[in-house]
Length: 77
Image: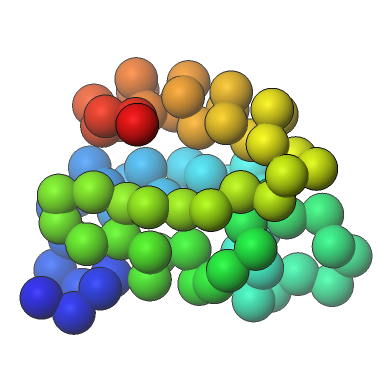
């Protein structure tokens, strides 16, 4: 499978929820996104999504990601 294609709905919804909070780095103009690579969905490959987080935003972004994963039924490593 090509990364980001044919993903389970829960993975796609999880990525979308993260992007509702912070825009994708590819769309950013003000350097406020915690995602240092993009597009974020390209980091997904069934059954998981791997997304790096900028060190300066690690605490806030990881806490939010952990909270969202509970809602979307995804695991977090």
